[in-house]
Amino acid sequence: MQLTNEKINKIKRSYYPENLEVTNWENVQKEYEKLLEYKIESPEDIIKLIEISSEFDAILDQEMAWKYIKMTCYSDQEKYEKDFNNFYAEIISKTQPYDFKLKNKLYNSPEMKKLSDKKYNHLKKIISNSIELYRDENVPLFTKEQELTNKYGSIFGKLTIDFDGEEKTITQMGIYLKDQDRSIRKKAWELINSKIKTKENELNELYDELRKIRAEEAKNAGFENYRDFKHQQMGRFSYTPEDIFKFHEAVEKVVMPFVRELTVKRKKTLGLDSVKPWDTAVDLDGKILKPFEKVEDLIDNSMKILNKIKPEYGIQFNMMKNTNLLDLENRKGKSPGGYNYPLAELGSSFIFMNAIGLHRDVVTLLHESGHAMHSKAISKEKISYYKSTPSEVAELASMSMELMTMEYWDEFYKDEADLKKAKRDQLEGTLSFLPWCMTVDAFQQWVYTHPKHTVKEREDFYISLLNRFDSGIDWTGLEDFRKISWMRQLHIFEVPFYYIEYGMSQLGALAIYKNYKENGAKAIEQYQDFLNLGYSKPVNELYEAAGIKFDFSEKYISELVDFVKKELNSL
Image: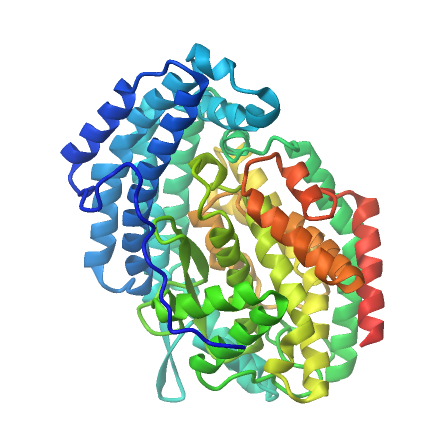
């Protein structure tokens, strides 16, 4: 591919001066008052006001984005956490009543009703849903909740382990779980979980604080429980909680036999009496894939792969690199996990992750790159409501990128056997992930519909879920570690109920990959059409634009399981 030295430049503002200071509440308040005074005399004025307010949203969003990015990149430095929390409390939370008034002004204007339903019905639905859920008394609760969720990353970012005389982060310890020496794997696993167990009480207390606040938010908005409140708040218009329960059952029935077969195969191949938790990551062929030595190689090879999918993707990623929009390497004092954070005023995004040289790092970066290409595709959208994509849509973009790029993983794996191994692991992972996805969701469904439960009851229910979606792992003698294993899932603390979408999107991604293998360039064209739409249409219509169905029925899952099995046989 042809490299560029070009950087990503800030998009020129249309309605606001470039030097507008938004860390001062008086300035922000003044701009909101201007928006509320804006005269609406025609349907065109409605759209104009939305465009003006969307640009203002972008300015605020990017200011908050950089504060969040710094906080997670340096979670051991309290000044960044304080800076983010102060901005959220003193600026963002104060904008919420004004934002509510602005939405009311738009929605209740006679001119709004004159806008074409065919073109703007989805926009009206988004705005009316937001109005319906807003309560003044929830504003300080959202602020407090945000402060508490930040504590989770801070707790994990500071955890380190002394292993063979070296200080390691929890993430860095993951490489020892792939060691062929079982005693090393066991030692590493026990050290990781023993370290997390030292924070068991603190994390339980943090979670109970979050549950209490979230229950209060739901009650204020007129809901019986937080689950129902969050379902509507997340704009889940296309399905109900009952539909999700059917998803759980379908995975239990259709996917679990496949996953249990993998465990039996692991047991036989490794020659074990039983598969323990420290045996689940080790490679069955005795070879650990080492796709890169330096993060620079991870970046450059990923860039080449994206270029082969679509040249514009490679160029965009190249420009993100030039603009220092990548922080990929794991280090002490960095929050766990990975994310793609949109930067509205750049028309791009920032990718954060914790690479340690394993194959999963390749998958993570390509996953986040799917999000990044989505951010780029909708960068010129002038209506901010269309840029805020729900999770079922956002994760389809990223998970599809994981699978489509498999065809070009030879950039990392020159040896054909390594390439086939990487593909097999990926395909097996698409299905073996689903039971955990269902567990995380079912756990939260129960937690928030049983608000008065005790820690012991929570543990018992969690264990019942692990038993329900049991893949055949032997936890005998490890029960104290097993009952707190949910604490490593940051979504449960930081973004409640944001997880089942990974399962829905995984099915969609498999369908897109199948389409890609069968139709090539046409599938990429449909994928791009899907990206370009942002959230301008309902979820089911967006999936249709991508050339697939929005479906998580037992029949559909069965068809995709058969497809995966066929692909695995071909390898």
